[in-house]
Image (cartoon, rainbow, N blue to C red):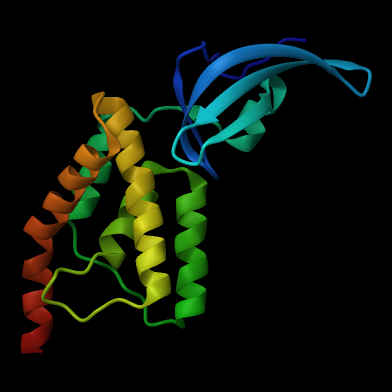
Length: 177
């Protein structure tokens, strides 16, 4: 059975859309329900979780290698853009934000991070806004950290610095209107 799925090696960092950045710690072969299955064993340190993914399901799940430098650059540019906040109900926006985070697409995650960022001098966020912001920024930071071979807090600081540098210009204009 020929598979067009990307081959991951033990030690590779991969992105699993629903959980973020994990590391392939083992390749296993198991018999399940009478069928021989090849499995990637992924470890997600932050969640202290181990996941077994059948090799033939990798593509349908959307598991991928870390983003390219070009995609990372695009995501960092997205952070510098103007926040886009729709005037729809929060529950609808929250669902859209969650869908973007779970898509595993780095640029979409950067959009959520940018749209929910609040500078210190702005009104406080609701609890659920803060939760979604933290989920998105953490997911973005973990992939950035894996790509730049650093740790998550360092990557998160870099992301927040970009946001703090570019956000004030957008918020100052809203007070004049």
